[in-house]
Length: 194
Image (cartoon, rainbow, N blue to C red; front, side, top):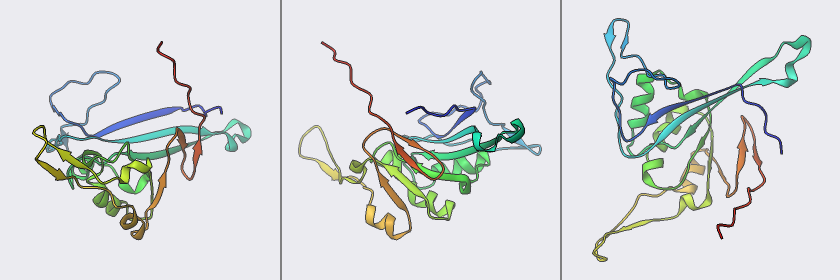
């Protein structure tokens, strides 16, 4: 399979473990402004976990009549962070509209990557796709080093998500995500280390 050429890719980090508002701009990173309308903006928060907004733009080859190409942009949310509202708080500061998100992709089923999912889905407001590995729905425990102390971890409830209108798509191999589709990609052979 030949992947289409991408004209522009932007990744907006909505949640990471560290933030520093005073870092200078350094290409290719573009840092958000600290002021708007002569007012100081509150700083984004950092927390254990991860979330990124991924925007992919490419020319639409179907619209190339008279060499005029239209640009198509798709926006995906990759992971949702560990708190209920941290990602939403940071997105509000950065002026991100959740309604532009075409799908949510979860890297895996640990709570530091999915906790804000219900609130993000509420912000999107329309049925959306959730793409993840089938193991993202496993129930998990944390067992402490002494071997005796343990606790149940929060887990994703697939049926509850589906009842809310979420189109849950589970995939195990590499895939190409588009605005309305999910295409299987051939697996990359593993190199033998011997």
